[in-house]
Length: 148
Image 1: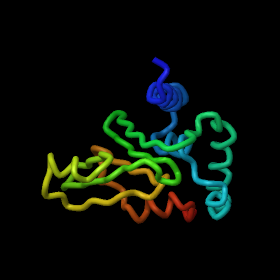
Image 2: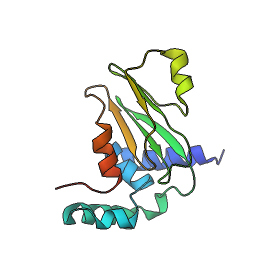
Image 3: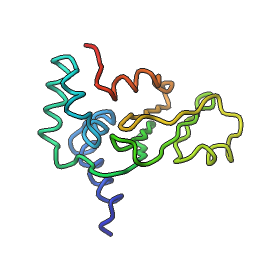
């Protein structure tokens, strides 16, 4: 059908199934940190991020988007790097909700434990076997302030 969604699905399939990369790497390919953020990373992380940008530069999503990808017991929510499209995160015990607005979650689960709106480019990763990663850790990674 040649839609944006179909192109993203093919890109994720290429990365995960054909190239065997993790869902976190998929996020770094589709919405990598800005070059200025990469420069603030430790040398090891800089090399990895620069390599991903060079090898998979054609898969970088340009323009406003929000993507939710589910794959074998894990789910990731991802927005464009400047946060033009909405994504809201809701958590109730071990359940994660990733709609565009909080009111959509409240229809299903009115008594959430917590909600927040991720920063642009921040990835939200939920796994069946592991609790949701800390928003503070994810925000630091989105800003490229990762320590080795």
